[in-house]
Image 1: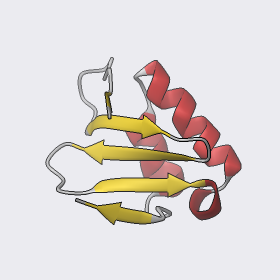
Image 2: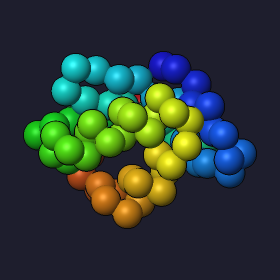
Image 3: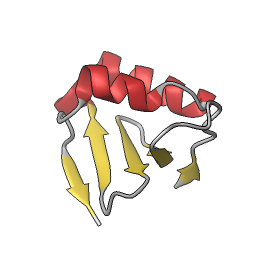
Image 4: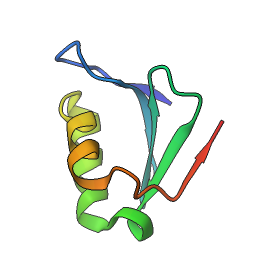
Length: 76
């Protein structure tokens, strides 16, 4: 996983991993990694999440507003 840059210093996102049709997100103080896929969250949302993850800002807010529980799976 790649460490999230957290440019605001306030994000609950700790790290992420980008796949071809997915993104896995690890949150601070959470025991799970959340896998979001194009099938679970939609192409547009996954593309937005990838862009925000790479930029280091806005990912947690986007997840809270648009995809919340649209993850494909969660794992330890």
